[in-house]
Length: 391
Image (cartoon, rainbow, N blue to C red; front, top):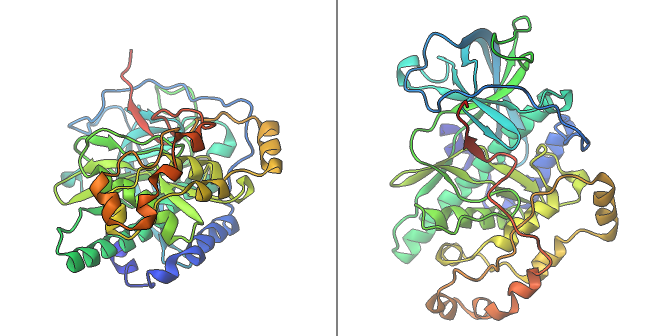
């Protein structure tokens, strides 16, 4: 978390926009962190699930091996890779949760979290196919987190400054937990109750105890329920697009809310360019995902608090795919988790729109008819998690 705080001072907020986002995509591309070509078939790993959130990590049902650990920091212009010494780690043999793309296991690394202070979660591909189990693929997840941490630092700073100017309470801080990339250095291993060989590379993050909340997805889902700090988290999605100069959106926001902070995990960066520009793994749906996320966003007090202009129909049209991109999408025929068709103004109180100036008064310019062609969305995304019990 200290790295995240130092990033807030490393680059000016105004200079972090398009240049920062473009550098993030360029660095990811140089490192080979690109999305694999769409696959017609995916070979799912055959696994049994254990009870979620075990109170005791246990001695049985545990794999022990040595692994090298690395992480990434984004400073607004480039990624810095940080490598750590190889160490002994432990991982549960059975996952206790899965998402659209990955399985989640209990994991321990005493170099990150002392055994007496809790544990981590290891996340690895649900699929055994080689393209989903490369260093580049796992690093794409870690780099999404690095970009999210950078923009969250700017967001928290601007919230404090805005609160000081308006004499309002400081909104809760958004903190993305660091994501680590692990490379197993021991000989190939296979769990006794697993039908497939264990992957050599995987990601891991600190385990977050508490009620896990899903705020939005990478494809247009927005949680409209009254959940803790919802408006602040939703405003961050809008903020990331504006502060990156329209180059990206940080979406798929989920985590645990506390009194004065929200601990977020596993974000997804959506590059607002052509599908060929998508560099943050298979969950990076490009401009299609960015458009769906912004179309579903509802501006409210927090957006006005940060002087964010409302999402307009003109902005969404700029993110629409070209004819060539539509044709390419048809040829690839990927499975699509559709975006939301809800309007972006539903959450704006009348008194807010009257007080915020002409751009907030033109709410009727953006309504459901602008998004009538959008298919409906569900909560599912490439990295949303669900508990699955054995049997």
